[in-house]
Every structure is written in C-alpha cells, then in structure tokens.
Image (cartoon, rainbow, N blue to C red):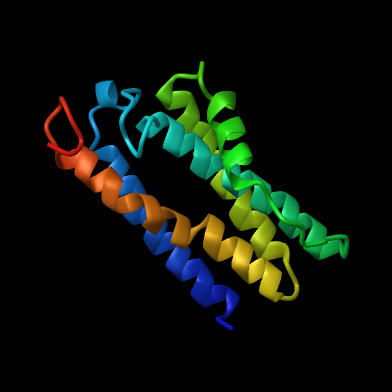
Length: 150
C-alpha cells in the first residue's frame, strides 16, 4: 500500500495534467456533446467533481468508523451527476469541481489511518479518474472545432 504522501503526489500530478488539458479546450467547445459519447466537456468536469464529493462522504465515514462498502450503481450515479449540472455554465461547473477537489484533499488529509477502502476511493476518484478521461480530453483539445475525433 502506498503512503498518503505518495498518493497525494500522484493525485496532484494527475490533476495538473487534467487541468492543463482542460485549459486548452476553447470555451465554446466545452458544452458541445460528443465528448466521450453523448457527454460534453462540462458534463465530464461535473462528473469528476461529483466523484470527489462522493469520496468526501466516504472519507468522513471512514474517519468516524461508520463506512460500509456497498455496491454502487455507477451508471445511475453518473447520469444523476451529469443531470445535476445540465443548466450550469462551464465556469460554474469548473469552480464547483475545483472546490469539491479541495474538500476531497482536506478530508483525505484528516484520515489518521490509510485504510484499503480510503486508498481505493482516493485513487479511483483522483489520479486514476483524471488519467481515465485525459486521452479523450487531449484529443478534444487538439482536434478540429467540428469534431473531437477528426
């Protein structure tokens, strides 16, 4: 198992790469559907922030000893996260995602013990999650304005 410091460094590096790629996307392309299926960049950014918020709740539960691992309906949760941000402009979604990440890091830092569940939630909602979406984000940022895959 990695240390909290090692995990935090990997998360920071992943976040910087993710935000760097996001900053390369023209603002007018952030709400265009077709990024990773029917999603837009805005949908994906909201999705990242929502998973940070979910992890915050898990870390709080781990810290106070009430966490119980249960199966998650990822598709339903992702749909709910995207819908929650549907009417928000990209600037608001980006700000909320960044704020959610801040709480994610704060709550992770408060954990006295790094449990396997805490490590999994931190990695899956952080570094691995950014890495999962980064190739499509880079393609979208570098592609022609009409299509992310052209």
